[in-house]
Length: 417
Image (cartoon, rainbow, N blue to C red; front, side, top):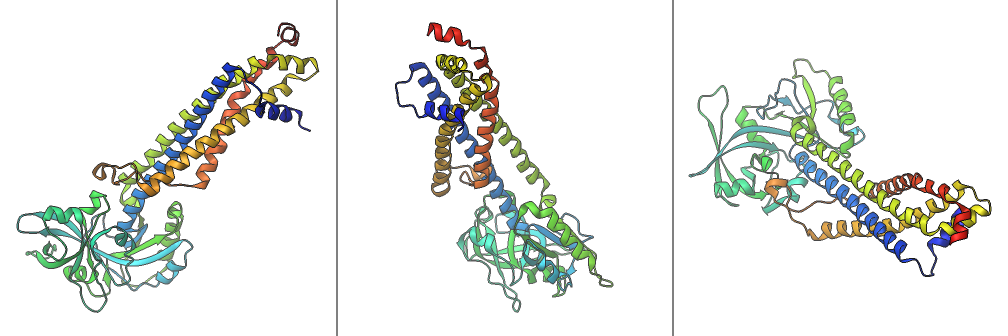
């Protein structure tokens, strides 16, 4: 039988009257542990939720990986590539790749009688995955696009529509300029729907329509596009999957055809993803501070327990128990007490996540934070790691204070108690 564990359990489940001081100190320590763990759970959930929300919005406009003309720069004025590529079927077989689709972009301006706005016209074909824009559609419907007839419908952001004072069903004029032409080209298209992602940098820029319109504007053939978008299942594997995509692209060889290159969304928008990565440091600071608070709370509680159980310590020493054995009794007892505080901390933290996820209790200014409510991300793995980390750090911090057990004299404690 584990004698130390048995004694600590008896002390933990003791029903008799407890001394007033230890009862208050331990209660305060448990509240500190509960609040600290709740703050850590909420912090991790909010930061990971915020990163996932912003990341998914950026990816929604440009997918995870793009395959484009090697000579195309970082602007939206691209050089064409053929959409008939031998590596396409191989890309779809790469583990982690969900979808491969074609796209084309053309920068221009959208104009009404009173306003003008710079935009990027992004063309999609009949096989385009509209899931992202369908989820962010606020009015109207998605463009009806097929490969036989060129569509004159476009999807506009609600922010641009408000700026230009247009609504669903209105027709707007778009102007585009080609380097080899003196006069701008003009398209009169119909607004079929409005979307809103709260990511103003992109909402104010992208207009979605038919890929055939971009081909017509650029004087491209029907088989020419800006490139391919590759959607993957796991963002954490983006570098590894991009390498496999690059290998597949480089393996093909077509004489007199354009040389292709790959890029991913983190390199296309480094300022956004660098900003998101900085948030990780904030989380680590919070976790460190909360772990210290929990540890010092339990240190104060442990010292009070040792002082008030000095007679028991003296008796155990008189019976021959070594110092380390008695220290283990109090470490076990501290672990039990810490677990009780963590139970309440988990309850509070998870309750907040559930309420925020389904109720959207706390709002944000989308112009500043790119989201209108505080996003949360519940992960069992994060919850498990936070609980294990909290109890391990707390117990390790209690090892040194438990050394005071060895300073207690059995003769004095038994004589003067």
